Length: 383
Image 1 (tube, rainbow, N blue to C red):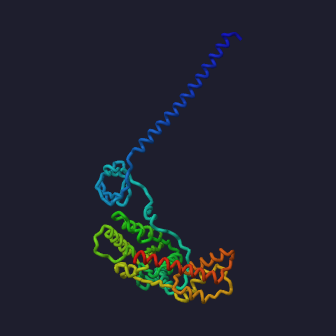
Image 2 (cartoon, rainbow, N blue to C red):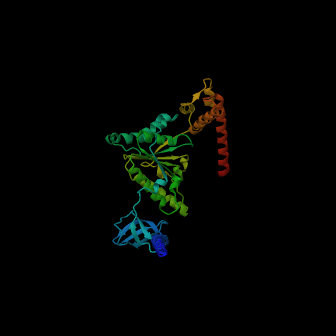
């Protein structure tokens, strides 16, 4: 091969390589431009002011009254591109002029479900000991109207819309409510009353309204309001904004209880340790007018509760049960359960599957000491 031929071949190779590199660079340049454009779009999008979620209170042609999260209300324009909205809808508005831009589709009960516990209880009546009279009352007032409403219609009487369970802590009030929900195959909606008292004006009342809407949607349902005294305590004439908000929420609760039939498939069960603090308005006929006292268990109640919680345990034969029962007098049902659990732990620590009398005695001492410490702390805190 001549020198010219070799040179020509080398030049051809160089040109081919150069052309290939140009193609690769152009492709890389195109990808970089796309990446830059995408990043610019992301930056522009992130710089866009966020939209605010508001509630529509009323609509007038192309204008609406909206309620912003802090409770204030404004009369604003509705964008022409916005779909049809009605009172109660949630909308997106711009933060500068608060004009309605579009409707925001959200779960109807999304907010309230953060404040309640919704479940289908599995607690049965035979898991509750020492409360025969209370069980019969609840069956009569709650279970029977839910299962046989036609019986009340034929007789021509109206059962209570709700009941109040009151008594010391740990005596089985929540268990009773769960058991009646299970026996009637009802949805159990549990809410702590103090959770309904919200920071912003009107929020608590809205939550109460949503809770009962949720109950109607999931009916048959039982609304269990724990610590109801935090919301329904006696009203006093003190004009702080916080107390006014509690009263607004309380009035909404009364309105909701009044708003459904006593033969509806939604029942309300209130629960409190301090019945003496409650406002008479919540206890009048037509509301929570059946009062059921859930006291500390008596001698027979202690035996029944102890047998329920030791049902699955393996006990030694020489246990002096009378002695154990006498030592647990004055204990609540929750404390008796704690004794059984602690006794089981004492057996486990000694690598035994059988529980001895000594285990129960040690457990009773431990629960008593915990009770004394809790009482002392309470007295130190509240005098």
